[in-house]
Image 1 (tube, rainbow, N blue to C red):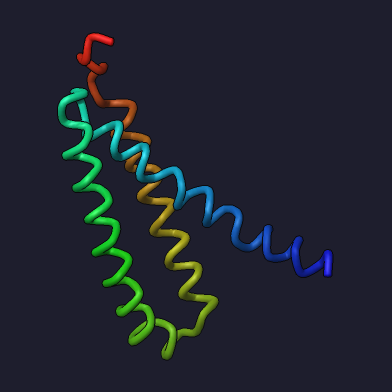
Image 2: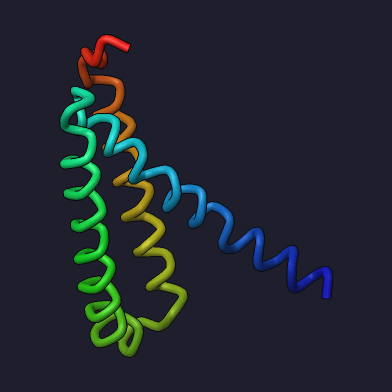
Length: 101
C-alpha cells in the first residue's frame, strides 16, 4: 500500500504543483491594478475552463487512442511546464502594483 501511495505522489506531484501555481501567477501578471483584479481573474479562469474542456476532448479522441496514456501525460506535462515558464516570465516583467495599499 505504501508503494502505491509513493508512486502516485512521485507521478502526480509535479503535475499538481505546476497546475496549481499557474493561475495565481497569470492573475498577478494580468491584473496590474487592484481595480482589474476581478476582471482578469474571470478571464483567466474562463480560459482555463475552456482549455480543460477542449484538451479533454482532444486528448480523449486523438492522442490517447493513438499514442497511449504515457505519451499523453508527457505531452500535457511539457505543455504545463512551458506555460509555467511563460507565466513566471510575465510575473517578472509586470510593473509594480499601483493600488496604493
